[in-house]
Length: 181
Image: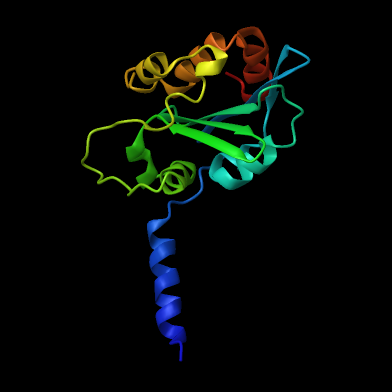
């Protein structure tokens, strides 16, 4: 027989460990990048997607992209997430694993990767697939250098990634118009 109180306690423990959703003010940007007929397209995505990796990946599958769709998410100028979806294949990168302690999408990425949530007093480090943009012109060495640049705001780093992917002008217009950056 299952003890209903024990199940309820386990659910409460999970809820206590899971971070609160980022507010609209804390979400810097959520932008999708893809190529349609070879042309770069950038689009603003709903801010709510910055709180749930599964919903973000599901949303990216809707775009008719050549080579998949890439989302750049920046939270509180502290960290970024890259999510790339090609059919059922999902690749992710989180620039700062420590953010998994405080932010739901970062927690989701660490969980998706099957990693343990790092201790709050650990050093910052990126987790995920540093090679996820190699075929698009941003190799793992370059992406690691960007992800470990903890001096610049994550919005600046996301813009650098978009620029290296050759989406600079399209990305800039979307970020300016939709997120006021």
